[in-house]
Image (cartoon, rainbow, N blue to C red; front, side, top):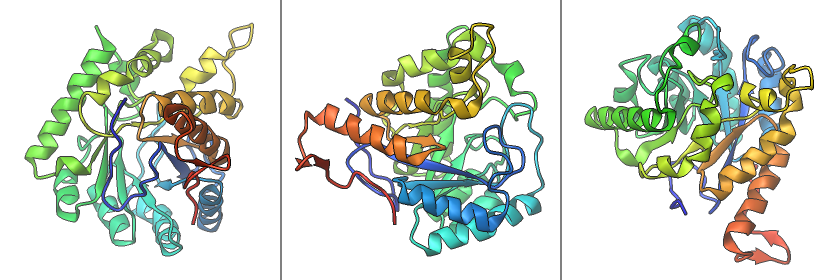
Length: 300
């Protein structure tokens, strides 16, 4: 069983946390355009929190396969009002960005976590920013930007190589001044991982290997292509992204039972229910009061 970790400035519920996704983008794979308007994005973030999300992850740049980068100014324009208002209303906000300048702006506006899908490789200033602010930091396994990352999904042993590359990146950013206690690791499901080669499932089947690195794990599999491929129709047509929510809930329960620190999801309520079930399962019912898990919900 993986140890529970406490991260600076973030909730400690005694169970797997739920991170709700707010994409302030027109082109994200699942909900691009749905929350592009800042007012709608803020309302969506508040709904996710009310539905049980412990952390709200705000992103202004799509990282789906093939996506092109946006400018720094455009990314700031998208995320600025959303981060500021959610933080003002007491939400634990994460900023999903590869840019140190965007991360710094968001932290100053109240964000408590920097979720960097590049693990500090896209911007050499990121480690210094994280060290300076002391903010919690998600370091994801990454092999390149979205426009060409799948061409880099070549592995002899995907579990061993992702494990070793995460360890090396963690050692590097610690050498640059980041406290190990700030770091969350993410194996990067879907990022330079081929759904037709079983990379994502191999990583999930060996979560315990990543627990050996001694840091909390964020698992972000919600609605991703490997789920749609698993649930393909009889004619081999992958299931649509938005029809993979039940599979996402199953994944959440399994990851929570295996000791994940948090899961990143698009639909908060059923996944908050799933982590509640997993917490009761792992504890054998200890801590339940009249059938209800203590502090199971996030919210405001």
